[in-house]
Amino acid sequence: MRPEYDFSGGVRGKHYKAYQQGTNVVFLEPDIAETFKDSAAVNHALRMLMDLAGDELRRNLTKRSN
Image 1 (tube, rainbow, N blue to C red):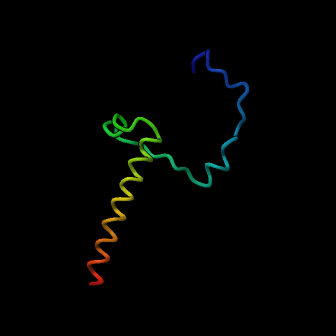
Image 2: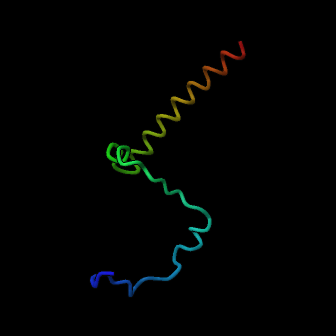
Image 3: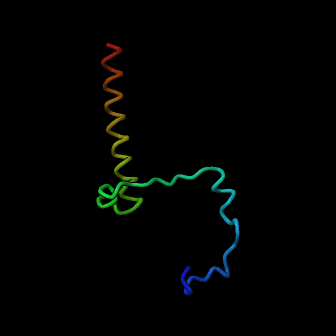
């Protein structure tokens, strides 16, 4: 541990309960992380994918009901 690291004001177990309830940490492969620089970019791309998948799902359901 480096001398400049100062944890004297740290609180032990501060996030313990929240961590026990589950986390939403996702690790991106380096090539993906290079393209999507932050959470906003990832969320935007995933929402677009959800919209596209939703359209495709609706089209498939319409075909089946005919």
